[in-house]
Image (cartoon, rainbow, N blue to C red):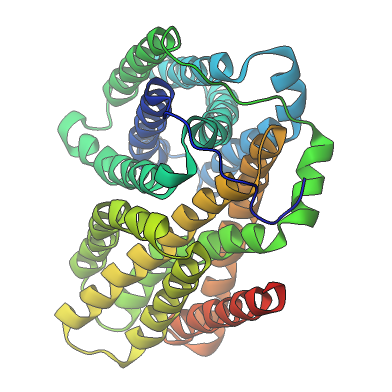
Length: 388
């Protein structure tokens, strides 16, 4: 499969499939937004050590990795659309387990199942989205998909003050919500006209060879995204801002990002997609580099909003370009490669930025991430000129 764009074939969108994918990923994003902080808060209240809380989070990551490596085998045994429904059911069951048991060992198993199921939903959902969508609408549909992910992650934590952390009610309600979405998705399968093709582990490694720049784009997104979410609030506190300001900054990061993605999608359908990606990377780098030189809170938050919008736009660009350039089982392989690239990038972003801030002071954090994004932008632009 060539890495240059495949010939675009126009066809009627499979709206039932698109709705099913967006519905499923939004549901899990809400659930993830609830459970990530809620699990930590509940374990902390029970007196569980920070080390064990971190290991519990690692169980989720192990589930993601296991799903990625077994995706080829699964897609050859089961239809991809049914695997997405199974993933939603798996998420609902794992959340129900959090609600009905306090056993720490059971929570480790449930967190692994949650990671495995979530990975199935995201990888196959992104492949299906590209199969169901003609190229003329691909950017806009990817933009709506990205907006729903951002909105779900932003809305999820709002449930914690409403339902509290006691009694497992938040877990139970989220499990019921996911079960309802799984049922609705299963009903939509009767109206869908498309389905992703099976993939193999060989396709996954082939994708890394054929599309290194797309993989690098997702790595850069993961690196910058987690640096913004986890390290920048710490930067604000260390530079004299209040904890309330640091908390507000995360909201300011998320909401404009969600609102902007459909507009990024329109740009991807009307402008050269590589140029949109380069512009997004440039804006992300500039926002990180500007933060240490800004004093006014309004200016800092404006730069932070641009940071979130630009960095997430890299993923919207990568998802659109995946469907533009690849077909068949390589779409599933590409989605799996994106999952691995994001996991590695986010891990590197959180650890490296924290270490750099400890070594070089608070300002070294945003400056180092900005410099890394600027380097990626330059490499991405130069590679485009060579291919042209």
